[in-house]
Amino acid sequence: MKKIFGISTAVCLLAISCNRAAQKTEAIKIDPRAFHKTIDNKAVNIFELKNKAGSSAWITNYGGRIVSLWVPDKQGGLRDVVAGFDRVDGYEQSTEPYFGALIGRYGNRIARGKFTLADKHFNLFINNPPNTLHGGKKGFQAVVWDAKQVDAQQLELSYTSPDMEEGFPGNLKVKVVYELTNDNALKISYQAETDQITVVNLTNHAFFNLNGEASGSILGHAVKIDAAHYTPVDATLIPTGKIEPVNGTPFDFQTPVSIGARINDRNEQLANGKGYDHNFVLNTHQMTTPVAEVTGDQSGIVMRIYTTEPGLQFYSGNFMQGKNIMKGGHKDDFRTAFAMETQHYPDSPNQPGFPSTVLKPGTVYKTTSIYKFSLIAK
Image (cartoon, rainbow, N blue to C red; front, side, top):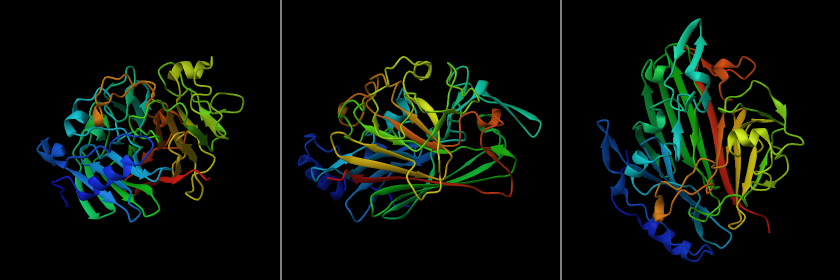
C-alpha cells in the first residue's frame, strides 16, 4: 500500500497551472494528513493517481471516494471537476453522504425497503422514507475499504460485506479498481461474488461540475444521453414500472440540450424529482460508444461516459442546500454539481420487467464504467 504523507510536488504544479486558467481560482491543495484517521478500527488514507498527460485523481479509502479529479481545460490549465471535501471529517459530517462515493450494496432506491428473493422476504433499513436508498443506513460510502495502490495509475479497493449487513443476504466480496488512463479517462471496474443468492447494484456517486468546483451553477452544461426511453417515478422517486419514450418531453437528451433549458417546465416527473433525478434506459451499453456526453460551457471540458450497465441515473443536484463547506471554503449550493450514475434500474428487485440484479453463488458480478475527458473541438 502506498501512503502519501505530504503535499506532493504534483499538487504544487497543479496550483501553478490553474493560476493560468480563466477561472482565476487557486488550485485547492490536498493535504494527505487531513485524511489520516482511524475509523471503525481501520486506517483511512488518501491516494493520488497520475497519468502521463498530467491529469490526476485523489481517492480516499473512506467510502472509496473520488476527492478531486484534475483534467485539462481550454485555457491550458487544469481544473478539478469533482465536488468534495479537503478533509475526511467533512465526509463524515456531511449532510449529503454520497459525495464521490462508491455505492452499494444496492445503488438507488428499493421501494419500502422490502424485496422477495428465492421465496424469502427481506427488510432493509429505511433511510430515505418510505424507501431504502443507496444500500441503507451504512452503505458502502461509510466503510473503510482495504486499499492497494497497484501503480501510479491504479488503485484497488476491496471490502467484504457480511451476511445480512443492512438486511441484504450473503457474504458479498467486492473489489473495485480505479484507473486513470493516459488518454484522460477514469475507468472504474467493479467485481463481486456471493455465497448466497442476493441482489447487487454497484455504482459511483461523483458530483461533477465541468467548469471546475466552486464555479457556480451547472445549468449551462450541455447534456446528451443516448436513451430513447426512461423510467418515470412516483412522488417518492420509485419507478412506476413503466418504460416511456423521451420524445416530446423534458427528458429528451438525444441531442445536446443545456441542463437548465427545460428543468423548470411544468411537468409531473420534474416535479416528482424536483428536477432531473431519473433513470435513463440506455440504447446500448457495449463500451464501444459513449452513452452520455456532458460539456462545460465555461471550461470547454467534455466528459464522455461509457458503461456496461443498462441504465444511467442523471441527477441535477436538486437537493443541494448549501449546508456543507467544501474544498476551498465554498458551499454546496443548489445545483452546483450533477451526477451521472451508471447502474441497473432503481427498485429492480421489485420490478420483474426490469433487468435483473440477482447474483447467485458461483457467478461473478462484473461491470465497468469510464468517464473520459477531452476538450470541445474548435
